[in-house]
Length: 164
Image 1 (cartoon, rainbow, N blue to C red):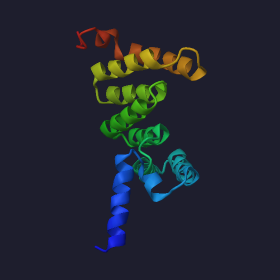
Image 2 (image 1 turned 180 degrees about the vertical axis):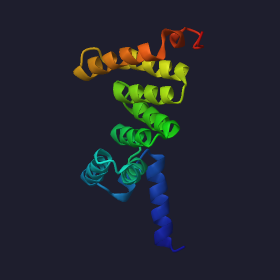
Image 3 (image 1 turned 180 degrees about the horizontal axis):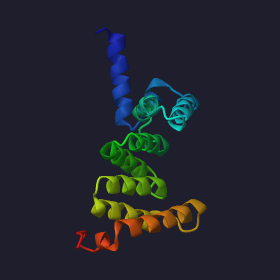
């Protein structure tokens, strides 16, 4: 390996150690990533889920701190019925933007699709705890969570987390 390549690797390692994303290390702009997102969203809307998933995977690789990209990846995974992966993607999205109720709600749907009422209930409880009450989005998803709560059944919401 030549000295220039070695220096590039060392520089990139320092940037990563300092919390940089791959987008920042490679000098990719937010506008370029948003163009990729727009194309992926277009694919998603037209049912081209495999193509959309590839683009959303690219986006989370290059900007792993963007909750919107993780949410989009979760949505396409959910559409493809890959519920375990969707739950993980929604988990990242939720971690990055705790007050956004969408990832928690859709994670609950995925848990329910897997027959896991206890974890579906946990996701609904997280939504109810963190979703803002004073925003339209918060109120909308609190209402959706209430309907999902009825589907899950109150037994799953017992304090010990076990169904009765």
